Image 1 (cartoon, rainbow over the protein chains, first blue to last red):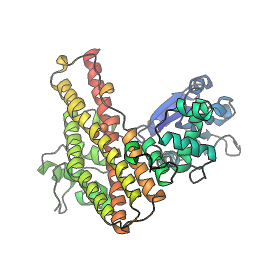
Image 2 (cartoon, rainbow over the protein chains, first blue to last red; image 1 turned 180 degrees about the vertical axis):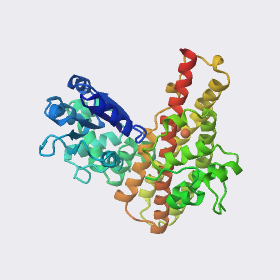
Image 3 (cartoon, rainbow over the protein chains, first blue to last red; image 1 turned 90 degrees about the vertical axis):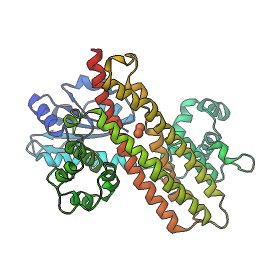
Length: 197
Length: 232
Ligand SMILES: [Fe+2]
Ligand SMILES: [Fe+2]
């Protein structure tokens, strides 16, 4: 997955300091942002794993967060100088005098989790519609053809496919085909399985 | 996570992470380290110690990225290492997996159709991986060598960015293969052989993901920086 760290803080000292601390520790692109306007450029990106280190007093309540969170896996870390303030929009808050190691570990934890593709939907039962879609995927049909056959939009097909992959923990088309054969979703008496995989 | 340095003993490297054994072998270093340091052993084997450290540290800790160090190595060293890794996959790891899967199929006495399907999937994975490797050996690496040795002779319209293909396909497939066996296949086989096969897949996945990471995050940027230098 596409991984990024963003630093959103108006203090140049804090921004440069964080950059110096984090650079070299992670094999992840780190992008400094000066003001909230720059966040707008992220409205179109999707399927990224993004971590934001922000000044919560200024930036925790922006509208754009909702938009970014819908299409990406996001973690907000607040870096604050007041201990008696709570920030409900942040996933985690550190005081400015926190040891850098703590923040580094928090970041490692977030990105390591992304590697072990533990997703919350894995293990859920496929719906009848999803099984139909899976069957057609396994037979090698394109999204367009699947959409036509089931009288649904291409967009809906794509969203079914995303759910199927998350529930089964299988991502490749040939892997899904194997799953469909193992679970008798397609009749292998009629088709030679090796032609499909 | 520990970052190794040249004064660490070679033996601590293996104790800390035995997955590094094949990485060390690829450098032509043999066991029997005694208490020699990494630097001692690299010098004895005429290996660039910094390069060795960069490779083992990248393997050991996937978030470790010795940016500046790496940019000082010749891409030729990297290509040499990557080629050795390919050979190790082709001559050792893939035949080992072929063999274990063959044994697994033999161990099944009835209802073995599922294993045939898994076998077909494995074969497809293997074909794609070999195509990818072949593409790098015949197109990507020769281009890098030419760019380093003879920068003005290479076609300025080509870039490594077009040559080096994505790794996501093969990465996804090996993960699917593991999941299909662990989660969805009926256990109609000898479990010890199957465990051996899975453990081999897990180890191979660690190794090959590191290999892809070196290509994507070290080789490609290094070559791009050389391209930029000559193309202004
Ligand atoms: Fe390669
Ligand atoms: Fe590659």
